Length: 534
Ligand code: FAD
Image (cartoon, rainbow, N blue to C red; front, side, top):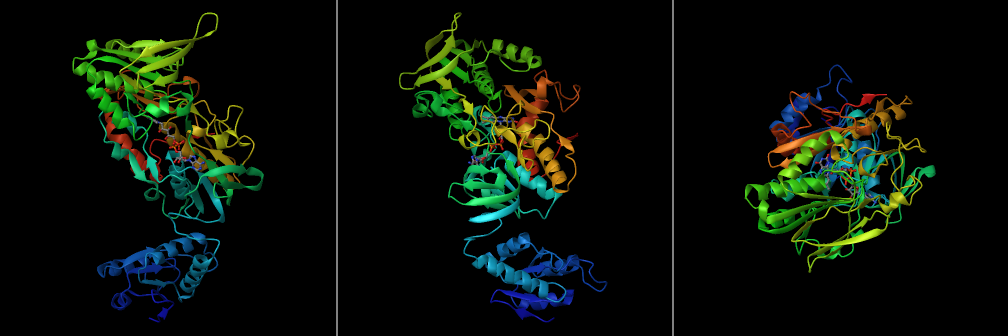
């Protein structure tokens, strides 16, 4: 074995045999990188055989093979990741030249002043070009990166997102209902960025679609071949006067925030008598059922503790119906009756005075004049108004209402062929849910792959969204529907009748879906999400 020491931590050599490993172990090698594809020559020891022996010496093995002339930034980034860990590395290929070349490129990248720091989890690249740039590392953004890598492992992908934490928002209803611990709904973003994908921890401020670049809030630009936009929507707390000042105290809460959802359950368990109000703003909102889910789980607790006769429950809805798809109304209305809840339609929350426990709703009288209705409360659960994010609304990519304008089936931008959208930011008429995102991701991943390979787009989104309505602890009405309110049940009715509350749907929501999210969707497993063909 002819070893060349490139630095005090990195050495390279030509092809190894299993007998060479003990010598590497004696040298203190901790990581062994194979840069030679298996099967290049008949007498070549396979990577698996090398790895088997190396494991016996506690040497970690990495298979990073490439042919000469085909080394791209992904390999450099991978190599830097291990080098930056400060471990003793030995890399090998047929002669050692490829491995040495990779090391040289990695050093020049590391020293490049325009790239202040490059690793595969967090990137502060001042100016860079990616095959796919993803705006937003929430549910859609992370899943998108994983799904793309499953199809094209060598893609150069970056996610731009300033957030330190990533949230499983559907869990917040369960937190507010005393079922989940809030900590299970949050993880560090850096732990979820797929290997090989760059995380640029900045905010996007604007788009220059004709130049294929986005502008970040630190003033730098990132270039792309394809852009996927998935930054969610804006919770407009400020639209209700006095609300922000009193959230989290004076009996005012919301399951729409990580820090507040536990306060909902605290209020529910503390309330023994009085008036409990639950509000719903104008559509569209994310998870249209979430405002009434908060009511059902609270009321179920009071029901089971024989408190319903002491607690006056009100649902104030800016809209005119309890739920947008009429097939689910009989089940939902029967629960509102069971909980003796008063339904107030076409009433929009405008102002809250937490200290004096008063709220004001606006409605219209028969002549169309605005009327203010004042009411008091002991507990107030607010679902905030929801609007497009400013940087989407003020960009040339939005529709006239400010949402990202895409074709509802292909999810490609209507005016720019290399721009795509996902999730809550879209102007499509589906229910804004994680369930929708789960179905949209494979569609966009397929269609981007088709576009990159000069094929016609093959995948279509049917508007699927789902809303597991937690009508009581232990039972759910699983609403699943697509564009136009068409029912799209996942299971046949003999397994789960979505129009009725079932224990199976509760089991799915409480036990299965969080696992499917963290271990499946975010890692590119597209279970029950196969796109329909165009
Ligand atoms: P998000 O997951 O919100 O991610 C957006 C990301 O973009 C964030 O990480 C943010 O930091 C980032 N970002 C924002 N601005 C910028 C910028 N300028 N630059 C870069 N990055 C940016 N769905 C269901 O299917 N079932 C349910 O039961 C359900 N219940 C819910 C209950 C509640 C209380 C809530 C709040 C939501 C619920 N949802 C449910 C909805 C679901 O969580 C969302 O629809 C889904 O998370 C949307 O994913 P997204 O990727 O579009 O946005």
